[in-house]
Length: 276
Image 1 (cartoon, rainbow, N blue to C red):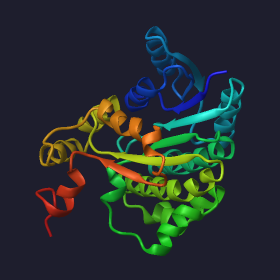
Image 2 (image 1 turned 180 degrees about the horizontal axis):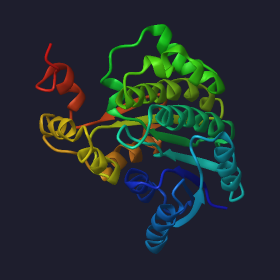
Image 3 (image 1 turned 45 degrees about the vertical axis):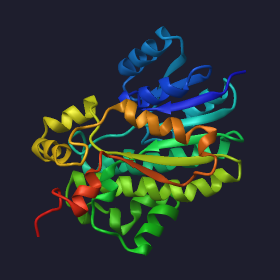
Image 4 (image 1 turned 30 degrees about the horizontal axis):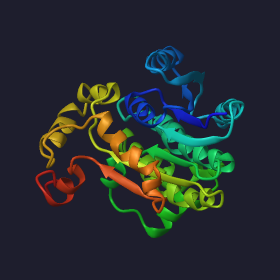
């Protein structure tokens, strides 16, 4: 029986990572948009992979559990790639918090209960979690440790305390990275590892929505003034994931890796630094 790889979000980054490391594995590909999910699964299967589309909603614990149950019908879940999510130009504050923040926390929690010995997971975060004002140590602890069903009740996550959808997204991604740190401790009890990758501007359909949205000039300026001087590609994110999900990363867990062309560095110490 082949190892099972659970993949959420049938987007360009998930596809790039799954193609890089999914050969010889049973891939269960979950997405809310089944038309897109079937298209991506067909692309993979036509290239010799074994991918099966599955309708799932990251904002629903029941949907996540249904996907895990389906994956287990093929064997033990040994790999997880979470590339699902919504962007600030695509969704409301409430939807971003329910999908990107709560949903990711639930997924990491539930997969951690069943992950195979020697397994590993990667969740796709964002540089946005690094580009917001510092939280207090207590706020970070709350994001990391609050029971999943109580997360959205935190004062810091009340809509009245969130400026706009970008702020909601930044909080969600900060929470992702803190949950990776707390959940990796639990995953470690099964001999498994969990890490996050925080991409910068990566050219995907989601990013193109941003380029053409109300913050388009902001994003174009960001990649123009980062040290790399360009946006990145999904395959460059897959380069990092390939390392993190290999035996070469056996001592790496609970970490978040920036893959942003230096945009965060420029934001704090270079030409992207906000004017005072």
